[in-house]
Length: 118
Length: 113
Image (cartoon, rainbow over all chains, first blue to last red):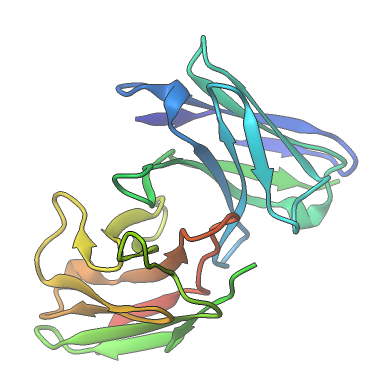
């Protein structure tokens, strides 16, 4: 399973870090993706990280606004959002990319609600 | 980025009837060397994370009822629910896993008529 950190309330301009802890599989050798869902809207794939060596790839839409990291010894991936704006409000999901045998996001975290408000 | 476009945006179907959702990609999702289409379908119910239903365009995820089926190749795909059940009310998304950042369609809201 993937278990994410809890809901947060932040002010504009602040930064935050969301965690995603995996268990029950080899965490280091499966890509972890981060997906945003703004209120009432669809799914946006933000970025992915390979925990074994922290190789990351970012969507051009989110490049420079988010930073991914991972600690394979803790089976945990992190999403850092910087210089928050009200438009960053939404639910952030982590998901496991299934890999060569199942090229899809086959395991999802419960989501972390982020509210940015002054 | 590859653009994914679903149709319709919303759909109302009677219980027991067939529901079909279409998904088009801006470029082919077929890896010819593997003869596999890198297309997945997800179901999202209110207050829940998305759930994988179909991968490789037509392979059902373990535990998914066989009334759900996926078809298509290249740039045109569809998800069909053969006999709609009340628990199938949800928003459905297609996703390309051909190239990062693995974009999603805008979603199709499925309701009971």
